Each structure stands twice: as structure tokens, then as C-alpha cells.
Image (cartoon, rainbow, N blue to C red; front, side, top):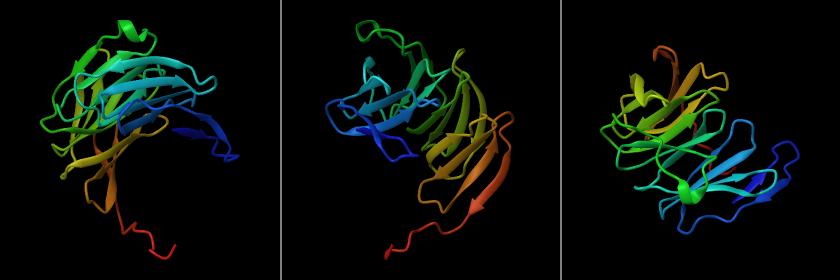
Length: 195
């Protein structure tokens, strides 16, 4: 796995991946840490500047989505067992244990997003987007997306959530505070095959 500076297009660092195929990636909001999950259920977190392995976690289930959050001091992971689990990054690999389990989805969790605060956003095959208080483990808001959710993202100021459905042409924007639909963006975003 390689990390690039988007301005100079220069490679900053190369990381060795966990065994198995890569299943999920997350970069810290400040760009200082990167996390990767593998099909062998392992999660690794590295420092970008020095390339040092910060911690390694063995998840109890497959990992389809990960997110760094909480001032980039925690990592969340989820997959087909419908449970979102959180760990503290500062804990050494040998001492890692689940901090919280967030339960409520009725389908596989396909996407996670986090920010500097302790709020997580999840998207699922159960056709919902959810926000969570990662400290208490309690769900905050549930938004009916209408189709299985492929991807979610949180705006830099944590005020908006974007969600994209499986095989959906377009996205939905929601307010994070109250879960209200702000806008539905529709259109054909297919790239011209000649480009």
C-alpha cells in the first residue's frame, strides 16, 4: 500500500499489508495515520510520517469497513456480522481488546466514517445510514436510504453525511445533527469508455 502527497503527487510512504487481500482503508483526518484491514481479519494502523506500526488488531469477524475517529485515537471496524467494534489505537497489539460494540444494523455493515469527535457514521445492507455515539455505544439517528448502502462519508465539519446506495446513480446528503435529508444528487456519473 502506498500513500501519496496529492499536491506534489510524490509517494510519501509504502506500507506492508496484512496477509490476505485488502478489504478496507481509512486515513486520519490530519493525514498522520493510516489504517488497513485484511481478509484475514487483521487491522493495522501506521504512522504516516515514520512508517511505524502503531498497533495491530485481530477482529473477531470479517472486516468490510474501517474508520479512524475520535481525534484519530480510535479505530472502528465492521462487516457481515452487523456489529461495529471500536479499539483504542494507543494500546499495544498484545493488549488489544474491544472498547465498544455498536449494535443495531440488521444487515452487513458496508461502510464507516468518523471524524475528530466521537461520532461514527455507518452504512449497511439493511438500507439504513446510522449515526452513533462511539463513547456510549448508543445509536443517535437512523436514516432510511431506500437501497443497500455502499458508501458513507462525513463532511470535514461533521455537519453533513453523504451516502451512496448499491447500483444507485446519485447520492444523498443528510444533516448529521438531526438526520434530515438535505438533497438527493442524481445523474449519470459513468465515465466515457474512451477516456
